[in-house]
Length: 616
Image (cartoon, rainbow, N blue to C red; front, side):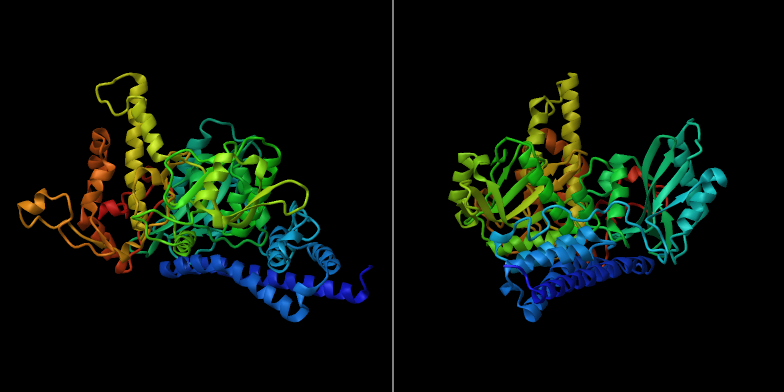
């Protein structure tokens, strides 16, 4: 049956309503991102944090609004499939000359899958692949700025061009001494150039928007000289009680950029008319970083999910290894599995939890949502959350299927839903995270290589001891960064932390996290008598939010070498007074500085001591 002219008109109206819904979403998203400049200029950190949380909710709100409108005005869920075929075609037509076509396609998918039954999630009805290219999208002539600006030091001087570059961002707040900072930056740049000849193309290309996160603003760009390109970032921070600005450091090289844009950090706010152009520029700075992670870092998490899933399907088609139970100690709350050739792990909430765990599926999901919305300060892994995810049954080991059937039967369905004779494993709810080396395994490798034996002076043992010491120091630093972000991890065992490829320690077990401000940090009371002292039982009352930091030691520091390093660097983590001081400062409205780069890179250490909790 051929579609009628009326059907075509309805299809166009539905497509137009969906496009209106997306345009409203991106306008609100971009407006909130642009307001980050004013919040930075007024040092309104509480508002900046609220905006970070609120912006994450924008997408789902706009999708729900659009679905309600389509059902109210067009009875969209009752429209025949011929109409939905046309809806997609009309929508593609509306994407011509659009500045965010890839985001609009994802929005279309989100709305459509809320309306149609899952059996219709086929190429004909949603965008499995992009329909519109994002290459060479240009700003309108009326737009004030292109994606990036170029500065040419050979025509004036390096110092003059650096000064103009900073001033072009138009920050309405005075620097303490901008020329001093420019001279420092120029010194680092000259050091990077070394004795290299300055070629005719010598220039600095800088993205047109500042990148805002936490209490910092970042200039992001690259230095080009001949065939050499060096990515860089200039952090702009406040000093002297949030009254004057300074350029705090020069971050340079791909590794520094990877840490700055880490999956364990909160999303940036940047004013982007053409986000794909920003992503393309950033891929040039970090070619090893997947596009999905860059979209995530820019706050465009739904687009990140779309690209991740496309990459995942592509990887499945070009690999043959099997999904398996992930190596390591099994958790009581999460069932974790992986595909060895794919650098992510998949986590499913179990249906039941052995004592002493007292939790629920909804409570666990709320903890993961809290982490999604919270400042992760480089210490909590971001997660991708999916529902109704299909995997080929033939790629699952029997052991993994048995594990799912035993511990998470409510989340598992095995069926031939396409009727093609190919069984699928369908998981109703799953979290996906970057794979890291579990810290307990990382430490055990160091112990096995002689790292815990101070009498072993072989080169292998010395390297292992260095690995062990770095891990223990980083573990304490991770805890202190989490504390600064008002997060008490709950279960602090080594197995709940992972080591990234850059050697950073990241927390990834969220089912017991609490706000520091909700905890009651206590010192263990002195025994009342000899019987208390000899008893293996607790002789004092313990409330539901009571925490006794001095009791952490027996669980964490059984190895003498580990204990020695930990006590040398982080002994205050075993003191209730330390945790209470941090809690009191957070309750008083203080927001700690947590830097996404090493303290040794800072120009301004002489101005203020680190604001990290260990300085309290």
